[in-house]
Each structure stands twice: as structure tokens, then as C-alpha cells.
Image (cartoon, rainbow, N blue to C red; front, side):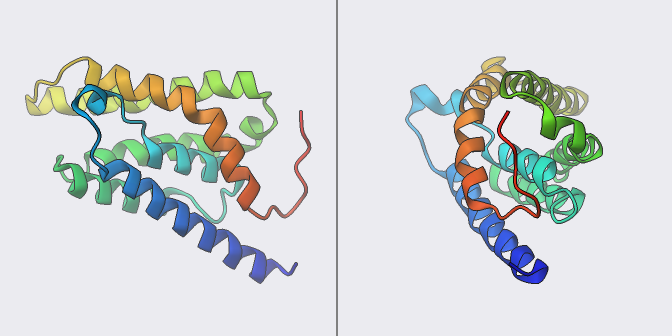
Length: 167
């Protein structure tokens, strides 16, 4: 497959998955599960920045962050900043992250999730917004639990320049 066709295929798949992620972000859930909605866009962007860092990087993180800010009614730039920080780190170390075993990668993803929610917590604290603790821990835990499933699903649809070796 030619490089241009491969890039176009990956961009189309990423666009579709981004739309699905945004839809899952805004979809209403029962009151019992409100505090446990996973961070779908964060998981998608982490996957993209680890596996396809030249095509999907900080620009996508910033734009998706602004969209999430508008959807959730948060401070404009709050999610954009946090997503940009996380995706900067994953893009910088994507070669190391790509070769980690799945269990070790899950531990790294948990650290990214903790950092993501800590930055959100810090911004809310500076702004004087009080939120419940489950608003931070719930999405963190559910995102960590569904990471292996989403990773497997997304890795089936992307076209890689070199074949991936299973570890």
C-alpha cells in the first residue's frame, strides 16, 4: 500500500474513532454511572500518539481538548492543556512505550490517567471549583480497565508502516 493511501486510511479511521469517542463522551448515562464515564478521547489520543506520532500529535490533542471543553462546559482550555501535556509526553517517548509489554503499558497508562486528572484537579482548585473525589477517581479507574480492550480494537483498524510484532 502506498504511503499516501496509508496516511489517508489512518486519518479516516482516526476521524471516525474521534467522532465515536466524542459521541461516547456526550452520551447520557444513568445517574449511578455518571462518575464512571471513561475518558474516551484521552485513550484514543494516547493510542494514536504511541503508534502514529507523526500523523497525530499535539495539534489533534489541543483541538479535541477544546471540543471537550465546549461539550462539558469547562473552562476553555482546561482539557486542551491537559490533553496536550499528556500527548506531548506520549509522543516524546512513543518508541519506548511501543515496545513495553501490555501489563507494563497498562501501568504507564494509569500514570498518564493520574497525571491527567491531577492537572484537571489543580486547574479546578486554582479556579475555586469544588468537585467530588469520584469525579476524578471514577473515570481514571474505568479508563484504565477498558484500555486493553480499546487498544486491541483500535490496533485492528490502523495501517502501520511496518508490521507490529506481538510481545
